Amino acid sequence: MAKWIFALLFALAAGVVAAQEAAPAAADPELEARMVRITAELRCLVCQNQTIADSHAGLAIDLKNQVREMLRRGDSDQQIIAFMTERYGDFVLYRPPLKRTTALLWFGPAILLVGGLLILFLVLRRRSRMDPNLFEPDEPGQLDDNRSP
Amino acid sequence: MKYLKFLLPLAIFLGLAAFLAVGLKLDPKEVPSPLINKASPAFQLTRLDDPASTIRRDDLMGKVWVLNVWASWCVACQAEHPLLVEFASKKMVPIYGLNYKDERVAGLRWLSRYGNPYTASLFDEDGRVGIDWGVYGVPETFVMDRQGVIRFKHIGPLTPEVIRDQVEPLVRQLNG
Image 1 (spheres, rainbow over the protein chains, first blue to last red):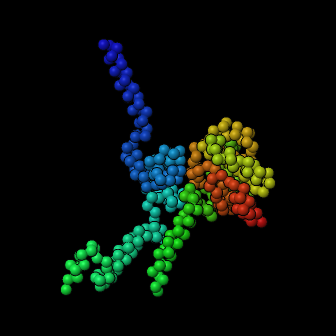
Image 2 (image 1 turned 180 degrees about the horizontal axis):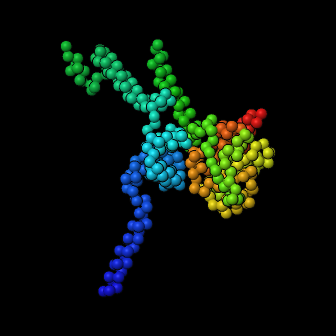
Image 3 (image 1 turned 45 degrees about the horizontal axis):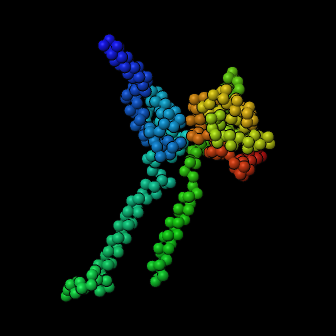
């Protein structure tokens, strides 16, 4: 029985030790949350479809530490974003700033959507004004029903 | 006017094909550096072969120089290295190495095995200087002019073509 209690205590102690090892990262949960919020907006340049927050690449870990350090120093979010774009360009931003060079990126989808709707509208309107005789009947035999007086 | 109906889809298709063809040629790994034509970031690092002596960015002002980012753990650097050794033997321009996130012993051993084209290698153990220079993939190569402005950056291993067609003409022009 004593052996079991000892084993249980040992297991609990191991848990405590493990928790202590993880402690530095979560030492300041508020800072950590801010760090994650900022790095979730930044693209990892090593694995380009991941955010820095998600990535475990060496550079992403370094940059996370960089952000932690800057936050501890009291830098604002804007200062940190500026620090990153100065080094890696607008490409690191998942939400690129609105500029002349990015206008198409921002408005392209809306332009395509509006253009598509416009074409659809024009085509449908033209068809609705066409003589019904120009269309093939849906099914043979229904021709007479469609051609009501 | 009658043909327009048939030509329009063809024109749209050709336009789309042209866009896609250009897209195939683009390399998303090559992110244009915002540092081109800007002052090179300041640094103060120890020499790889001598922890007691430091090199600062300002020590390199007044001459054209090349910075090559490398590491002993970087496989692509090995492929690139013979080209650098050959380029250095022409003595056109001093090449400085930035030994990125490496260990001194490993870095020195790597140089003695594959040859040392560098005037000096700067030891960037924690990669901080690499971050300042916007390094995200090793190897990378920069060319600086006499005022310390970054004039060229190449991401990934150098090729004979890049050295011959881009680096050498630029160095000649900057020295000229």
